[in-house]
Length: 111
Image (cartoon, rainbow, N blue to C red; front, side, top):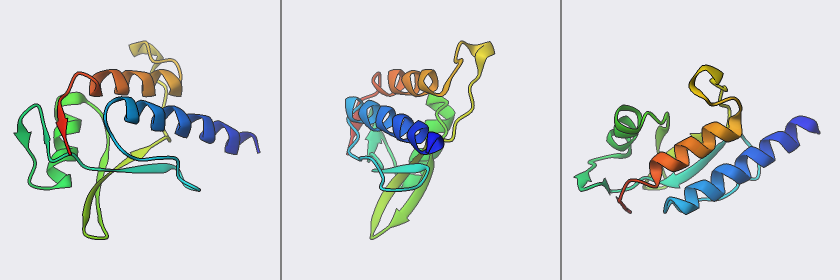
């Protein structure tokens, strides 16, 4: 029960943060990941695929996200199984989510 509550809290923080940054998604019923449609572009850079978009996220924003294709759509998969990095000022999962959201909010996405 404690683990379930912990992941629910992290999922809620991630879902809220992604919404603040312009992504449409939501809380999953189960699992450790959330899916959002992949943007078609970021700051004027066009993506040919979700894989290209995910690579851009990793290289430019230093946000680790995976791509997925399902039901004819291009998706990004966001995980809440994240590891704190105290030496970088990110002592817990919530601080990592907050930092990722901060980085996302500086980008102009087109979906």
